[in-house]
Length: 316
Image 1 (cartoon, rainbow, N blue to C red):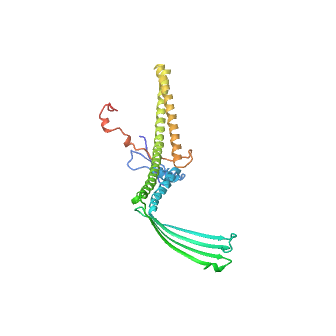
Image 2: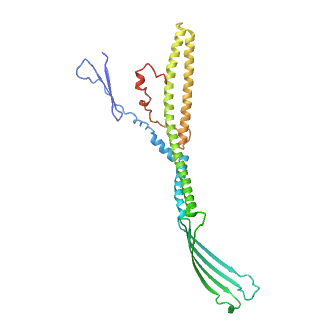
Image 3: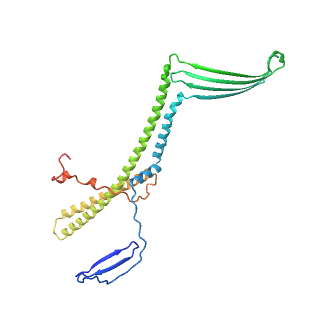
C-alpha cells in the first residue's frame, strides 16, 4: 500500500511531516522535522473602486477645478441679493488753493477739508433712497478781514434723497430681472461644473473596470494561446507521422499566429487602460498598479432562459 502523507503548517511557518500506515490502527510517527523559514509574505491588498475614486478626487486637477468653480459659482448666486442691499460710501476731500489773485479782496489762500458719508439702497419697487451727511472745514487767508464775516468755519449738511422711476424700472421690474439673471447664470455654472466633476468620476470608474477587464482578457488569451500551441504541436506530430494532411497542420499554425496577435492586442489594451488609470488619478502613466477587484462572474453568466434552449434566440 502507498503511504498517505499529511502536512500541517502553523502560522509561524513551522512544518511537520507525519506518515500513517493504513494497515495499523494506531498512527506510526516515522519522521518529524521542523524548519524555521522566512517570514510570511503579506498578500497584496485589493485596490478597491472606492479607494481609487478617492485618489482621483484628490489627485485629478480637473475634478478639483470643477469643484472649486462650482463652489465659487454657488457663492456668486448668493451675491445677486446684493442688488437690494444697503451700500455705504465715504468720500474725503482735501483742498489747498494758493493761486495769485488779481483782486486784493479775494482770499490769498484757501484750505478746505471735507468728509461725505452716504447710505444708499435700491428699493424692490424700483425706487432708490439715499441718506447722506457732509462735513466741511474751510480756512481762508485774506488781506482784508473786514470784508469777510469769518475765515475759519465748519459746514455740516445732512441730506435725504428719494427717487422714483416714471417709466423705466417701474415697479422694480428691471432690478428684479437683473437679480434673476445673475442668479440663473451663476447657478448654471454651478450645476454645470458639478456635473462635469461627476462625469470625470464616472470616467475614472470606467477606467478602473477597463483595466480590470483588460487584465482578465490577457489571462484568458494566454490560456487560449497555450491550448492553441498544444493543438499545433499535436497537429505537427500527426503530420510528421503521416496521420493527417498538411492542411490540418497549416490551419493549426495559422490559428496559433492568430491567437498570438490577439494576445498582443489584449496586452496593448491593458497598457492603454493602465495609462488612462494612472493619468486620471494624477500619477505617471507608467506607475505600477496593484491588484484590482475581481469581476463579478454572476453578471457574466449565461441567462437561465438560454440554458433550456439549443442556443441564443434568433433576435440576438
